[in-house]
Image (tube, rainbow, N blue to C red; front, side):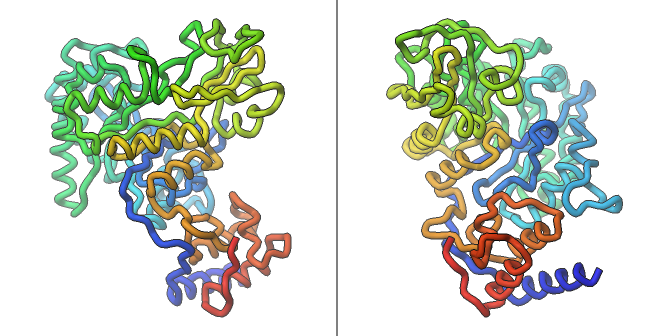
Length: 474
């Protein structure tokens, strides 16, 4: 108990006596970088909100909440979203789970905006009926406001997959596009009314499909009267639903073939301002097996979809390869050769049997350059746990000057690597020493650089924060 009181007193003193030591100048948020964080990634992938590096992002979209037949927005997974204890949660903690952790993250990083994303591939079955009814549209808008207020979100993101065309065998209507606009109008009105009460501006966005039919069916320029921006899902152009290998996220393609650039240009041609578009990035790859191309790279060859996950078949899902897994276990290993398509500006792997299309630092860099060239609003990515080491996130944030990406150097003790030595670093280091937390980068936590992370590092960090010692560059 005495140790806890002493540590608490030190943290309080640090918070009162110092504002932290910035290792870099803060950069202006010129572009958006929107992360999707999925509820289910907290299970097998063991992803936590606490793993997020907020300095790389501007918005976090939590996926997903469900939309009921009566227009109510409901918590998708009550246990892991609102009840599971994390970190220092106790039985007395009111809101736990992912939502509770998002609130704590926002308390430390108030510039981050969090949105609840509604629907997705699995939970889009009620959108068409709700959007078609004035009564249900009003219920949805009322419920959306209640949801964001109750759980501390800054807005709503709708992911209806898909209006008019349908998706996972869901109801759909020819006039879904018109009804979608009516639903967005109702939501915008309700969120603005609540914003007047709260003295804040709530965000409203959608996830927009990449194909031309969605753009035409949904009258996207008309939608923008009520939206802040559109997250364009510029990925899944090809996958194991195709009989031949191809690129998942080609930036460019031959005339007539789908690509990221063609999709973005279709949105702009339909009347959407470039600044209202976030280019979507896929942080996972797609894979085919039984690909035969003895003297080639495996591209545009017949293949089949894996039926289960495992090495060579998928990380946690069949045919889906997390970027971190590709980087650690495939590139340059077990006969996997990396190839580069100079037209599509994307890499791919082939080992004589398995073909994997994916993104890496080079291809993400090209897409970030395209965002700047086209003067788009920014990027969004699906989804956080696929890039659990934040490798691709750092490329985006650095290229787009999103926030506190180091321009010069970090310092030992900046354990959350946000570009500042402050009381948050002290608290995180203390939590690790007490056995209550984890550190993403052990090396930077070794403040005195003696080869171990222990109580001496807490003492050294305290002296630095109190201005009695100088930090060492990392």
